[in-house]
Length: 486
Image (cartoon, rainbow, N blue to C red; front, side, top):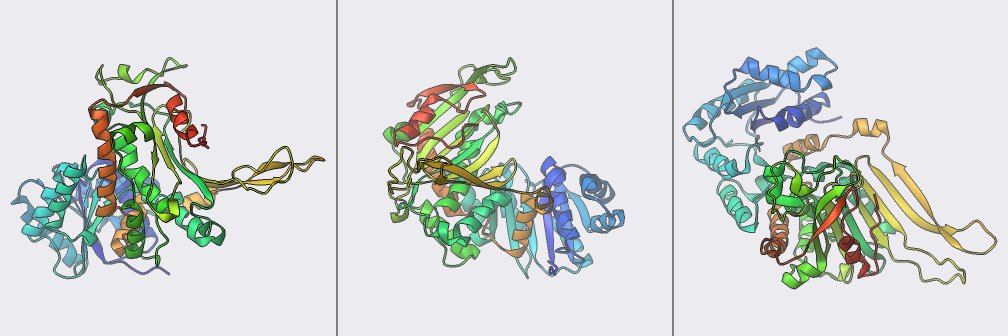
């Protein structure tokens, strides 16, 4: 039986697309499961002028596809209220404070406040400052701040943001959201690795040949050129999502499965990540742009709407990460992400070293591979060596696999539901902390500096392929190949 969580959540950007598509349905699921009962309140705020009834209708519309019992939905919506608010105006916070205190009194919530910033990142520091200076933080219970990525656009801007946030909140009160960490199959990495002695004992240089993380997309830039041309695959996918997944793969075994020890273990790995110089960027990383494809619908990136004709932006990145740790000495961590690739898939492939026992046959044992398929449908696959069915004693590879059932998928919490729930519980295990964010930025900044100075080749790849030939050559230099071929 679940226990009731008493809390008040204020959603900045409360009329926005994310709130309507993800946040309110997530809170509603927590209500239906019993985590939220009588003593909770939701205050929405944005520039838009709405009264409470209009805001409640917005919430009603956002949860309609998740509503089985209309009376239950109406009881849930009664916990919502709204105040129009200008986040840059200090005086406006008095009105918001009054709304928060009124909601807290109405639903008998003593402290325990969460502030969710679903707004443009340039407002994060401003809001945090005014929450403290204008007295919106609770005197009892907890105060927690949830912020959406991006956490800055470079190490310097991220450090500036961190400084602004820490003027009002301690770092353990900051919950930086990377929704990939809320995905069920990303969380399965820990269960597979630490829950099975066969993998736990072999999760090191003695048995693992290489680690691969792939985040591939079939779509092009679509209508996001205004943003994407300033970010590219490196900042859009590698600095955040990919690095956070790598954290679970490279981390040391935590002393306990608490958020404090998990973060400490991840940070031991992040702190050992090698930062590359210019020559190493060119040796260990490949950048590319998509060109035309077999279909007339596949325009080259430079012909996409609003893309500058001379853009050097990367729509594909592949690289090798190295960790200066005894556990990972000599083990490359390969990462890649790109648009207009063969198939949409997010996955991890752990490639184990081939066995050395000589069967005296024509076909010797091959490398075993553990694959964790994160998207679009969760699965775990294990490729192993077994005997071939023939007279001679030869080996072959066999596949063992499990796929998330439709029933399991239906019962799996959405990432935002999980992350809101974890914040209510004060569990930071599945959130990015400042140390990890800062190291990721330092690593990526070193690569960006080379690309900004145009001191690295810009490859072109065919739309509908798995990237440029240089990506394959990157692995071939170590005698490796990509597991996922699309």
